[in-house]
Amino acid sequence: MTTLNLGQLATFRLVVQRGSFSAAADVLGISQPAVSLQIRQLEQFLQARLIERTGRGVKATAAGLALFTHGERIEQAVDETIRAVAAFSQEVSGTITIGMGATACIHLLPPLLQQLRQDHPLLRVGVTTGNTLEIVRAIEENRLDLGLVTLPAAGSALAIAPVMDEEFVFIAAADQQRLFTTFNATELQAHPFIAFGAGSSTRAVIDAWFQAGGVQVEPVMQSGSIEAIKRMVRVGLGYSIIPRMAVACAEDRQGLCVQSLTPVLQRQLAIVMRQDKVLSKGISEIIRLLQTVK
Image 1 (spheres, one colour):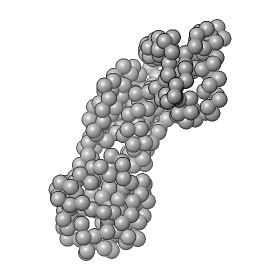
Image 2 (image 1 turned 90 degrees about the horizontal axis):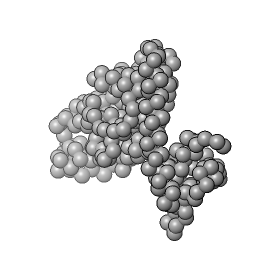
Image 3 (image 1 turned 180 degrees about the vertical axis):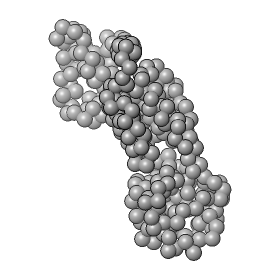
Image 4 (image 1 turned 135 degrees about the horizontal axis):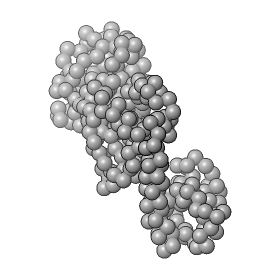
């Protein structure tokens, strides 16, 4: 090898960030020996030891810390170079990686991707689903270009731009609608509640709404999938509270009654990026489309 391998450099930075070879391997989707080999090859090229083992994992040596710092600038320079070359082309092309929640991926993203394919057939978009913390971490580690997440989200190196307020709504089986006359926390407490999985930002928003109404509800069932929740509600196992986008289409709310809550419950979605991310034409176009969503 006569030149610095950018792939090996990215792997090295991820090992340092995650503190272990195995954690980096999990993120990259490769084996731990493959990660170790890349680090050894990078050390051989640079003629310096970059990683040392500790009782709690691994850490960068002094030489490794120097490489880590310069590596970030190298990544920025590569991004700027790609952008400078792309400026000479009128076509929007390249590969953009996005992270968002599963519900937004199912109900919000498809029409946007369809529009992108029609307008920019050379642009490739990769999508990763996850919760806010997972997406933010991937953006900080430069594994994703941008994310659409539920606020709050935090990070000193992040640019966070709110783009939409999304309403949460009550749903129940259509043939059980007569059982519900009001849709506040106190009245809903008396009925079986099917909830989104604990620990997610979606669940936190819903729990906070009940708490604001002076109520703490114990779900009879929980699921990490809103589509699974809708199926359980349809067969009469209980009611739920879900993002309105999951029942925006007639086919998505078939067999369900849908009502706004009292008081209305909303969450704020935001676009999250690294502050030093170079805005390529592709990223700019995706941001523009996300900002047009109502």
